[in-house]
Length: 351
Image 1: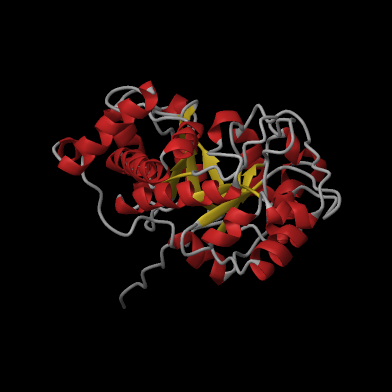
Image 2 (image 1 turned 60 degrees about the horizontal axis):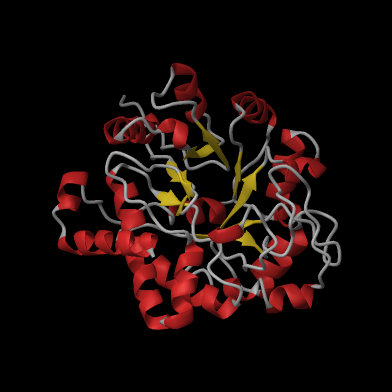
């Protein structure tokens, strides 16, 4: 009698990280856990392009259905890989400044920036970047700062749409963050618990507007902010059913992936320990939760969490995987479209 082949594990609801440029036995075991669905990389995982490609290849091979590999690679000060051929990318505020004098030119440059960003990452086996930042630039948030395109939500929507088009040309999905907006508060949610006192109507009219205008046909995923908006809910947006289900899913009709922000951040501490935080985010309607920089907490969560991922969440996560093969690094360097887009980046960065 022939033995039945087991079905590949579907993506689980937890995204974890790895310590360095080489995958350890303990990390392989963690990545095979049924609740794991993705891996987020950091600068510590980059030694050079060859080791990055080897690392992503090994991560993809850990499971029969490959895990989603993501990174925070926006441009400016949030760009994890900067050497061995990676192009220095401008902060998004720079594109907003160009918009002020040349809107159409800024949109073209945004598309080329998105293309370079995605093509280089995909050539090294990275599936997606948590970009673009849709927060408005109120000039008060140090953690957002020049990561934001502009103060005007209309400009943010147009430039982010153009950037996302560039990502898509290289086969990469986008992630809008930090829903509904982190730019109005000065506190850094990595270290504090920010509180935004505005009304729902004002937030949605300004900060939330780009999410409604873009929708899930443009934004493959969204990441809520670890910010409390007390006039809407007493929980941070990523732990709030009102924000995720009632407002984002129902009122705005959004059907893409909802990621939690990193559950080890101070802004997430209001929900309790790592298990309580993950439960709060998943019960609020997040499809996947992030646990970064603390493998002990990741193991604790994986040992304690009881969660059956809904079929619609699994399908959403699968839609984030690239839909066509990437150009390898050498082929990319010979690509005329890439060469032109790369030249433009140095012009934007230099001003």
